[in-house]
Every structure is written in structure tokens, then in C-alpha cells.
Image 1 (cartoon, rainbow, N blue to C red):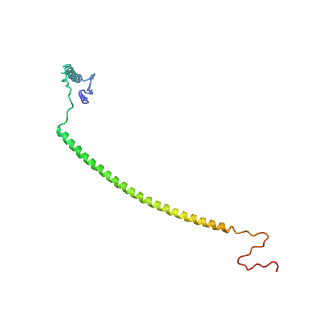
Image 2 (image 1 turned 45 degrees about the vertical axis):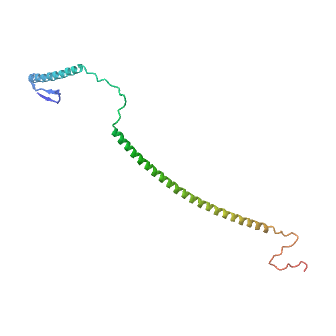
Image 3 (image 1 turned 30 degrees about the vertical axis):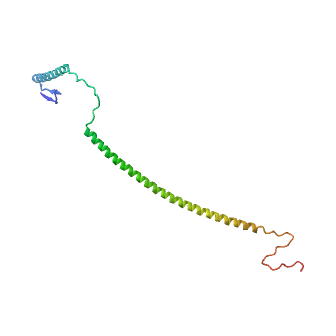
Length: 173
């Protein structure tokens, strides 16, 4: 007989084929092995049942805590020292941030004031230029108005004398 497989159970037993079936000795040997395995498993099962049947002692009674446990004093002291050093570092960092912010604000204010002064100067220059142009426009308009006031020649009088021509010929001559 040859057995294949591993573990507590032979997976499949192969028996030699003899006249009129399998070899009787091999079959009986295999059945004996199976009975042995079955007996071991039944013994394990009985042992497990007995272990469960034994009374389990109750857990010790719980005692209420009067107050939470405090950490040892050295831990509190070291924790406090660490917190103090962390606070000092944080305060120094905050002061540095405030100092930089003030410097940035002062620089921005200075640049804004300079730009404002430049813009005011440009505005004043433009206002002066506009006043000059207005004055010139008013003078030009006034001179055009006075030149347009020259009396027009009357239809009964002859042509108007030219300022460059000599005396006009008299009509009686």
C-alpha cells in the first residue's frame, strides 16, 4: 500500500490490486491507522470538554479609584521645563515676526508716501498746463472775436479800399 498526502489523515490510500480485489492486509492496516487517528481525536475532544467543565475562578474584585494616578514628580518637572523652553522659543519667534512686519510696514508706507508725492507733483503740473492752455484759448477766442467785428462794406459804397493800394480813383475824373 502507498499513502499520498500529508497531515493527520492519509488523503487517499492506494492499495495493490490482487486477485479478486485489493490486498486484504493493506486494507486492514489502513483501517487500523484510521482507528488510531480517530481515537487520538476523541481523546483530544474529551480533554477539551474537561477543561471547559472546570470552574474558572472569578476575577479579583475591582476597587474604585479615589483619584487618577498622577505622574511621578520628575516627569512633571521635566515636562514643565520643556514647556517653558518651548514657550520661550515661541515668544522669540513671535517677536521676530512682529519686528519683520513692522519693518515691512514702514518700508511700504515710505514707498507709498513717495509715490503719493510724485502723483501730486504730476497733478500740479497738469493743472498748470491746463490753466496755460485755457488762457491761450481764451486769448485766441478774444482776438478772433475782435477781428470778426470789422464792419462789413455797405452795398451802396463801392469796393472797400485795399490797405496796400494807393488812393482810390475818384468817380468824377
